[in-house]
Image (cartoon, rainbow, N blue to C red; front, side, top):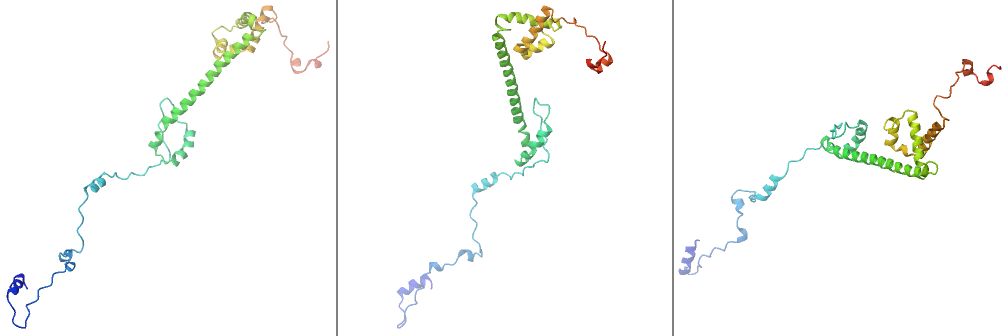
Length: 232
């Protein structure tokens, strides 16, 4: 029954003994058909795409390739070095592999290692130099305090030592005398004492070079001692 028919029924009386046609019951909202079924679409519509999610996906970096650990490392020789010691590299290789370092990554460590070696060597050389300077100073002070060769006898001791050097042709600033000056051993009290004693002996004529002539031995004398020589 349409709405117009229902409206008309309100004004028209039904025949005696007959009730007007009943009105259609109101529709049950809960019984409304599912629009997705009517449209023959068994799956719900996809939600709209999130533009932020798409941007994040596009910004994701490509997966990095796994690091390649070489069987043998070929490292660049750092500046100031002639080469890399093969024995040291052989000892370092297991450690580099354990750290999963590529050849490029390991190569970045060589300048740092070179600086460490250089600084260690510089410190060692400086320590030797400082020690030599301190020894030179200590020996000079010990010579000055020595009562026999230093103090008031210092100048004469130096003259006697120079006489010994000159007698044997050792010129100042050359050869052995230069080495003694550069090393600082020329300040050692024991060496000064010995050389100056030689100079004094030369001055007194008790150590004249070439004054003693050695008589050559016979073959029997060289082979047997005096007790085996013929008695005169």
